[in-house]
Length: 319
Ligand code: GRG
Ligand code: ZN
Image: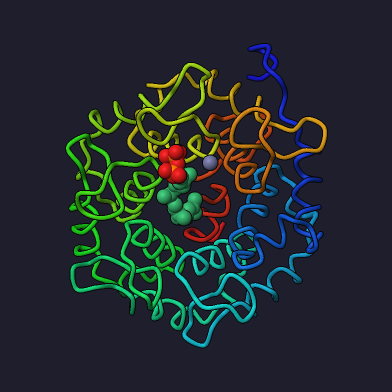
């Protein structure tokens, strides 16, 4: 697609080197800032490497043994060794293990008991013992348990009912009932409904219309009306459009060009918008967005599990 449309190319080698340098250089500014959420960073970086067909450039044994050390006695995972457990880190740990085909190294009952133990009576989930409820955590709990093949440990019907109670009149979803629609929360709610086979709760035309209106003149996507375009919405919006089968409602070539324009063509990495500083988070969302757009040479990514399709197939079908 790139050369056909006369747009810039994806700088694969440079992005691989950028990610490897961030993962290795623990003294860098980015590493220090990410210290407390290192396991999220590992998921972003390693998934990007896998989409670029370069996961073999890391020492899988070293990564897997470090991930396992991030587990807390409660069964949940912290952002780094010795840190407090949280659902967000627990999903990242499971996803990283899935990338290396090592989910079975986990005590699956222990992890899934930690997750199911957090479900509230109304079906919602807090992220940790401190109790803040958000549909982000519903997604994270459901995605984690599905990957562990333990969805039966929670009340799925109530979990779905809570997510549906966060649906707004514009067709979108917010973090709690009545909260404004935001593309990030929409990904979480649509993803959780997709995983649980509950997409019939969505008015696909209404939500598809709201989502495709996120595309602005530059071709990039924003996260809600009147906001700036940002590469990360190439993931949050596009994955949602794919899950509800309305991706043909946006201009895919223009979006691909916007993402490619956000590359640091010298040092590698992708930023939120052209000429900003790059980071691992936006490098992941740029590459994942291009994968959803079927950019040549990239592995396909699953829009609900946020993992390469071959990894998801291996988890569920053993191949
Ligand atoms: C496995 C992909 C994956 C995700 C795990 C963490 C998570 C689950 C989901 C987060 C969903 C979410 C709320 C994303 C939005 C993140 C974001 C860019 C927030 C910025 O919001 P504002 O209001 O920015 O600061 P805008 O763009 O609205 O100005
Ligand atoms: Zn962003």
